[in-house]
Image 1 (cartoon, one colour):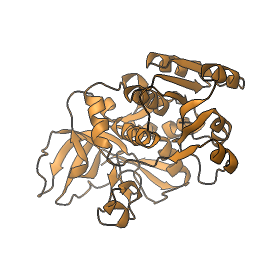
Image 2 (tube, rainbow, N blue to C red):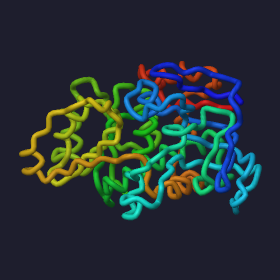
Image 3 (spheres, helix red, strand yellow):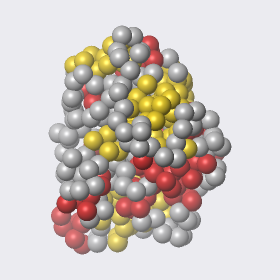
Amino acid sequence: MKAAVLEAVQSIRVRDDLPEPEIGPTDVLVRSKACGICGTDVHIWEGDFFPTYPLVPGHELAGEVVRVGGEVAGLAPGDRVMVDPTVTCEACHFCMINRQNHCLHWNAVGVTRDGGFAELVRVPAKNCYRFGAVGWSEAAFAEPLACVVFGQDRARIELGSEVLVLGAGPIGQLHLQASRVNGAAAVTVVDRVEQKLEAARAHGAAETVVADGTQEARLRKIAPYGFDVVIDCTGVAQVMADSIRYVKSGGRYLVFGVCGPGDKIPVSPFEIYRRDLEIIGSFAIRRSYDRAFKLLEKGAIKVGGLIAEQLPLEDIERGIRMMKAGTAGMKLQIVF
């Protein structure tokens, strides 16, 4: 079997001599068809977190069922499936209080166990969602969209609210569309790249602003009292530090972009207190995959235009380095 194996920090190699994964009675074997490259893959490649070697990364996965375990019902070889990568114990304290994304034994396909940058991958059957209305590449967006849906739950986008999205990459574009689906009256998007802002306008942004160092005056004109919800999709600590001031008093700031574990920002406790601010985190997925799946299947959120390039597995390192350098534009996917 061919797979991309992360062997050490910043060392990933495509091999063609790996054995096929063995599956248990409640697992299925999935043939990868499309698997997105995520910012989390960059952090794993750099050894920032979840460093387990050797590892086959890849957690934004869609593929075809090849074989099913003896206790699996409802799935059969040939089924097209979107894969929820999150694997939880359903027995620890956090699972028992319905906070599975904080499971004390949390695992994820492509993060802590072998994933989708391989021809074949072992997946729990309960993590598979059959689909037919979209293509492989669109289906591989279900995982990042599920993360966005959970983030939207945390941010509590209310009907008629004004939302500011920082960063117009694929995650920012998904938050833009999801905010509109949730009833935001207007979504403003900020980015340094005009081409990304053009895509944001196509996806329904009411206003777009170039991040050129002079954006504050424009944002103050758009929302003089600030925005009800500000969503950071950049994962750049300085952007977060500079943008909390755009939250309206009584509003919420969603930290969605993934910074490095050692990054720090200055925060004024008095400002949080005086202005009734909420600063909210959003980690991974919690009971949101089914809704993401339906948003894609029913066409409520469009992802076809968010794919910048489809790469063969042999180009995995180039894709990761493009993500690291910020030159990817939109989503990069490995396709088989």
